[in-house]
Image (cartoon, rainbow, N blue to C red; front, side):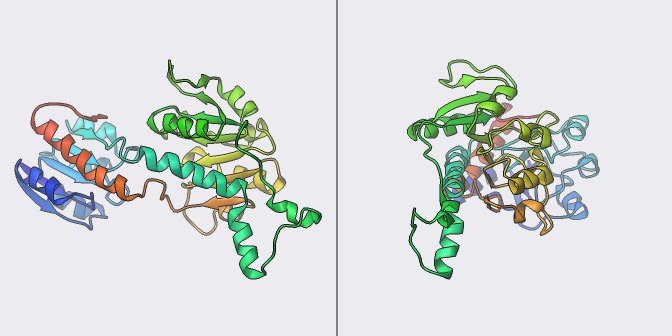
Length: 315
């Protein structure tokens, strides 16, 4: 069995020992273009890769006739052409669950930073030291609200969304959620999207990127929200229309935004210049513990496939 690792997949020495017990392993860390991907994938039975760095589109997959199993080092798989994979009898597996705690915790890092104006307060204090004077209305731009008693609306009640609900409960928040499929015995009140938009003080996105979630946060849905509502997005940038959210923030229709993803990572993105907005560089998942889990899960996926079993198969 021939195995290729096309990009950094955070494999430990033990992971590599396990993979080499299955067959010949080739390691690369710089597969970023189609020609290189095709060359390195040709003749391989199993490929482990990063879908963001390495193109896994129709053109690439159509030319990998021997490939039987493709494992990606992320939970999302929207950049893999699953139709082309199916047509070429390529089984595709993802890496779910490696960053559940990390992403859920990052939600509250963003929420607290936005709500309590931590970044703007820090920058202002460094420029000219001061202390809050409640008698001076100028300081009310740093005014936040207690999370206790507020309502958090969770869009997507999977592993991460469910963990977010547990943390929110610790803050004394009430949680409501919308999920495309029915969820039972979650301890969270399930509501329609319309109700979630109307009731929530905080809205956090944890939905896969698909036709239903594309541009979910737009001018129309923003109009339905409370003017103090804070939006947190650690899911996919395409779930939010950047121009619409930036306009709502600028006009005061929305209270703030904490974003770990954008629909475009360019200086021209209006959300990078919007008020009361904090953006992190898609780092919600990036913890020591999560990195260790990625290699373990990918290795177990490969071992299961080699044994004729399915683990974390998405196509």
